[in-house]
Length: 234
Image (tube, rainbow, N blue to C red; front, side, top):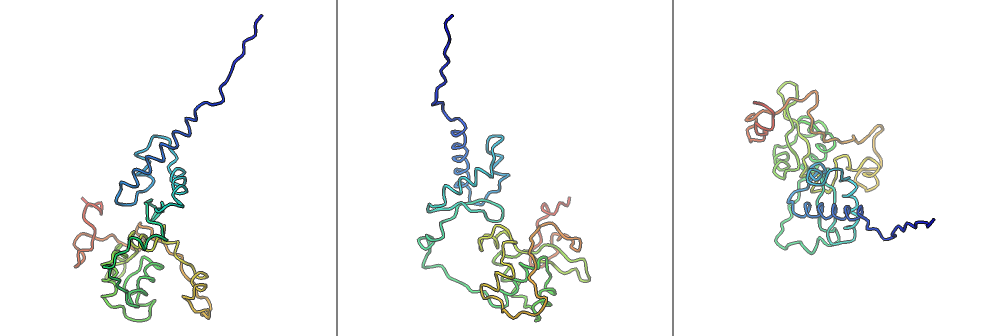
């Protein structure tokens, strides 16, 4: 009786590899076309079902690691940025550098590490009166934002950092800010600190705390309250 011989080809096409390459092309196109950073949920909605978006982004990030632009994660979202060592190529002579005052820098640091925080709480931490101008300058830069109102007499406004703050300083999240050891190592803090001195673990969770009330449209003189549709009110 004749025997049948089954031959299995060794050069079958790697369909899985082709799909992965197409996923990377789709991600690359969406990220390049977007003027704003995109989160993984938004990207997943435009990709074939079942795609591991996070893994694909990490692969794409690796592919661009040695190129002129890098794929970076800013504020939990993904975007392409010019490689740091090439940023000088895109600089312009007309760019004017404006330095923040020491008071504004101290105010920004307190808000970043202690948010949500009120003006009175900022003054208590600094030990001096905080001028209205320091907060106004930080609001104009877009680095801080009003969060809500403290549930205390006078219902003072609470402040926190914004996505623009994360983007400017190249942070994925506010908890990427340096801790006590890093600040001491960089010389930003005196090595002879008082006993018990600590640096709080910052958090920019957008959810209001138990001691905060939401802002209401029109309740701020400078029009800093969120539009009505953002408050969830009818």
